[in-house]
Amino acid sequence: MRLVSWNVAGRIQRQPEQAAVVAAVVPDVVCLQEVTVNSLPLWRASLSEVGLTHSVTPLDGGRPPKPRRLGVLIASRAPLEPLDPPPDLPWFERAVTARVDGIEIVDVHSPISPSPHLAKVLTHEAMYAYLAPHDGPIVLAGDLNTPRRTHEDGTILTFAHDTHGRVREERGERWVAAESALVYTLRAEHGWTDVFLDGQERTWTFKENRGGWRLDHILTKGVEASARSYAHEWRLQGLSDHSALVADLAERP
Image (cartoon, rainbow, N blue to C red; front, side, top):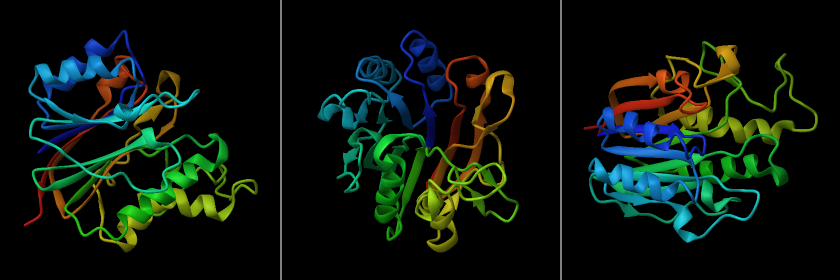
């Protein structure tokens, strides 16, 4: 299974170009983030044209309340079995779950840190509660908007930390634990694998490629990757402010 995960930045005008580069890598499953109600029909049409005829999205359940407008989409060549979303998600449009060829796919776009009412913290807590006891085979893909930094030993700094590694008083340890849950605790305590951990390449950068963070991830349990790569060129071409992730995955024997 070749899987592409990409935050497409809610683009409309450049959606045809985005769809063309996705099609060129011949994926079996595509996980998109920052799809909007307006771009959704464009994506479904474009992906269907290249054989990805099955799709699920929480946006089918209705338009998110303003100012929220960004949803997620899973598309596949093989039939998808939609699954119930994790309970207690604060923003329904930011996660979707489906099974394809016996593997569960979870596509998530975490709210950014300044989001109101602890939306980011609540999203990570809800996803962790769903994922931690899972036996697999399962894939978590998406823009998790963390970490600030990953150390050589695999531990992380979150966006609850300042640039010096100190926990911000206004965020606190609950925020640290929530952000750590998906990108650290799952692999440290529950047998998950971060497919891109040893790459440590930035998937979102400031203008002119100055600084940035590895915000986009593919994590697996009971699934192994035989190949993986970053599509940085899509970001450098201005198609999105995020690089895409491409991974060849198979259920672990």
